[in-house]
Image (cartoon, rainbow, N blue to C red; front, side):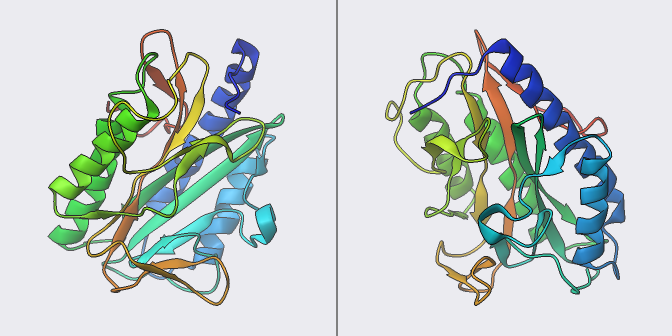
Length: 255
């Protein structure tokens, strides 16, 4: 069942989203060679808790990190630890914050120092795929219109979309109905309505869409060891469009 959020609930989700965005503002300048993923996650948790929120992912389904940190060929669900960032890496931060019972969820992929042009292109296309999708985020359209636009944009640049993991509805729970694939057909799926809150998250790979999950049960990597990028925002459907709830104050507002 898709839960329509009230104005009061949307205000609380807006605050949760602002907290998520503030984490990206804080983490981006720390993406330098030598810092460990544990240090980055610890810093993210501090930023979240200082704003009277809790890290949504910590303990979720047994996950052991405050945020997910995935590097290079890791697509999603990387567990923070002793690994150090290296010059030329790309690193994805998937961040969740719960404020007064309501969740915000978003992801960014950042460069570590100077990266290759191909890695930068992947980051850029993944971000743009999100904005191509949310062009269709308005009442009366179908969820499949968003999914289709993401797929067409990513595949049009020669990339693959991760099919077995999806975006999702969000609210009092991190994962609510509906599931939001990054592929699909126009005019299919649920009708979009005012008050729906959705976490839309293109997960894009350079090579094939095949993946493996490591023995830790979480870290999901490309099977061909090619790069992956991830970009996500929580949005709310408005009368005539949408609002992104998870932008950082220092981020370029695009879309």
